Amino acid sequence: MSFEEYAALARQLSEQRRAGEQHAATEAARRRDLHAAVDYLQQRLTAQGHRLDQLGRAIGVDQPPPGAPSGVGSAPPPPGAPSSVRSAPSTPPGTRDGGAAGAAGVPGRPGVGAYPELPAGEARLALPTAVSAAGAGVPTQRAAAVDPTVELELARRMADEADRHGQQAEVLAQRPALLPTWSPLARAVAVYAGCGAAAGVLVLALVLASGVGLVDGFTLGAWICAGLPAVAFFGGYLVLGRWGRPAMVAGAPPRYLPLGFLICFLLVPTAYCAYLLLVRGLR
Image (cartoon, rainbow, N blue to C red; front, side, top):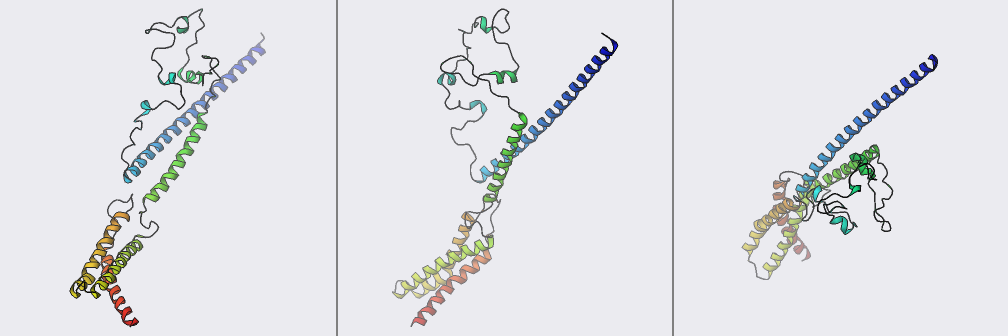
């Protein structure tokens, strides 16, 4: 070998070495980025889990439903799995009472066609995906390799979708069941006015009962001036406390007690006065 050939070979080896080092550095950087993405996604999923727990406690769901698995180890077998897979014995095939499985059960034994031992990741990919009924024990086509970058991107999109649905759930949880699109003041006015109107109907019933002699004048005046307005006020107060409270708002919702008292104690006597004016106008 001449000196020129030796120098060319040395340059080629040096270029291959630099290319290998550059590839190793690129691969290491890609792995660091993947680990950082996995850590960030794990943090997002943990935060989403805590937020879902808060939403569950807000709507009264503190525990999983009965029969739900409590962990990964208690997960049920996949649907459609044969009964032999569901109740597979702990002793490997080809053994009896924990004994040796024969020549094929000793990996790496010289002169024996045993399967070689593989690393954990390669062994997982080398496992057969299914076993055909015609040829029992014959492995089918191996599963295709999974790109971690694509899987992380899909997981990130799912996490974004979960965040979007979580935000929608929080918006809905901050609205009460009663008139959810109304403001608290408008809701309180509507509730107290509705209770006052219901009390006004009772006033008309009492007036009719007084006309036939079932209720005397003092009892009618007491119910119109104090009894029915108080019933309407406390009815509106209870309705706002039961159905006017958002699930995600801590503490008691505003009930506007002075406004409710004013509406109820003015609306009921006003309904009675309007009834008297109507009767006199018709006469």
